[in-house]
Length: 128
Image 1: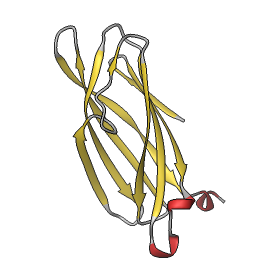
Image 2: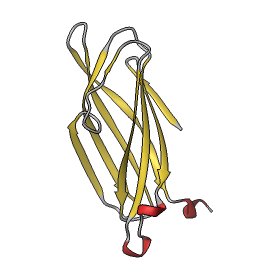
Image 3: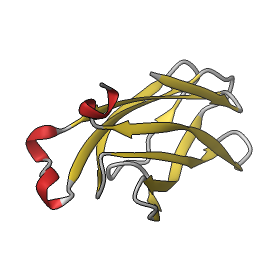
């Protein structure tokens, strides 16, 4: 598991290859990732937006941006946490993702970006 803290918000990521949803013969590799967002700071914050950069080992790069995470814009009080699972498909058996969450500090309306640590997406057969 990879974790990073920005401005009192900790983001941890765990990845899982999804062989049942993958089709290597057709260059389709599916990965799931579980994200835990924890407010380790002193102020209530809300996640407003996400921005991902997705890198495939075949040389392609794409960006995904939008509101919230899996349809939610969670509010995290100090000590609070939010966990969700999402997925990413690649055209090769290796890649990576990195990104940011745009957060709102509710006490003063300050917007800030929280780093999502870079994590690898690797099919298990590549690790042998």
